[in-house]
Image (tube, rainbow, N blue to C red; front, side, top):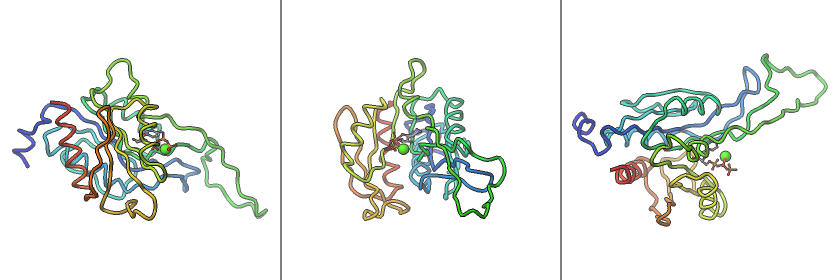
Length: 224
Ligand code: CTP
Ligand code: CA
């Protein structure tokens, strides 16, 4: 491992990786979030570090522990994640594997919300969170050479992911089908397609660690 760190193809390259869910508070004891174990993002950060990259790993509250040999920045909310990304820049490449909550609760309460006995549920109001991937993809100054997004879809995976890549302006989109019947959500395997200017590469179903290793190799190829 020491030798890999010293001699890998990504030696001297700074790569930032976002991972895990974000938690958006409703009150001090409740939150809304996306489903994400953080397993795929963690494996990607580990694989990049194994190729010698200097990795900044920005993670929401995930089920899995961060890898060793990377700089870990822990956040809770989407806005904290965006601030951490801005602070971590510049980077040679940025990989956005986090499942960011699209909305935060605008009328979050500073104290625990209590049932009032009326049987009526509180009305939550939502505001859209900043799109961290789109912001970095569209930077006029200091944009990473390679920006990689993810698209977890349940329907029309390729069409949705291709449109998402255009809309956000990232270089690659790693698309996967997370329909319940695939068993991918929460599992140890992933089946992805990598969409770029050069077309779509369909990868076989592999372990998340193997997907991470393959993606890190492809990133090394693009940066060197
Ligand atoms: N992403 C991000 N910031 C957000 C939302 C998403 O950085 N506020 C990133 C994710 O990390 C991922 C990519 O954007 O790399 C796509 O996320 P996804 O949720 O599939 O896209 P959305 O634009 O939020 O579209 P949808 O309405 O399908 O959720
Ligand atoms: Ca989303």
